[in-house]
Length: 321
Image 1: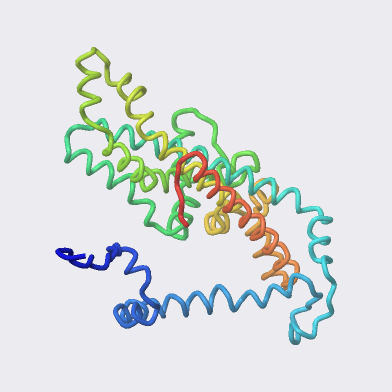
Image 2: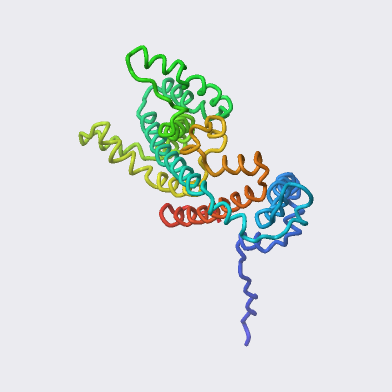
């Protein structure tokens, strides 16, 4: 046909994201090799301290007396687990761990939310920053320092009990009473962590639209009603997320804290899984038994972490992967 021109070949535009995704690993490595070099120390630490020690899990299934090679120890299967669960301490240490850990998680989160709401209501910025700094500071102190201080402060002849005696109140055996000791642990953990835990809730409160507070004020809502109907609903998703993620640490009752504060008098209510492993496995040379108990705790903890991530995705729309 005359007067017609051939059609140009049609080319489809490839999005930049698709081109970037189609790059080979070699090209990406050439472009970002320095980032991979910076990653090597972290991978080395992970391999040395997290993956290589997994070989030692064999201890949980053998009879090892602390002499000779682990590979030469006789295989006993689930014998060490049976020793623990058939012994007199399994129910006690598991129950103590759950009670202390759940108390710390629930009451600690409530305290962090309360501190965040109270700080958020302060209008004078200088006072607000001062209170936040003071409440956050204990988080950065080690339990060794806090424990040494509290042993003297909370003893029956310490300053606190002397103050109780001066005003006519009975002395409280904070660290020497089986019924009081768990609550002492929970209270000290709340005091240490509530300021730091409030940071994430303060960040969530800052994301609430200020116009909501202004509209509520115009409608006659007081400070408490604004807090109840605007602030709390505004951070509910964050509260749900933290509650779900905290589920993974339900068997971590605080080894360092308990170790520096407990004593044989309060073993009945203060002995947890971690201190039992330390006392029986390390100090008592029962390495196989300690490894078996530690493996049991790790397996349950892994399942709880997976459950917490599923709950976080289900109720708070939060995903890591």
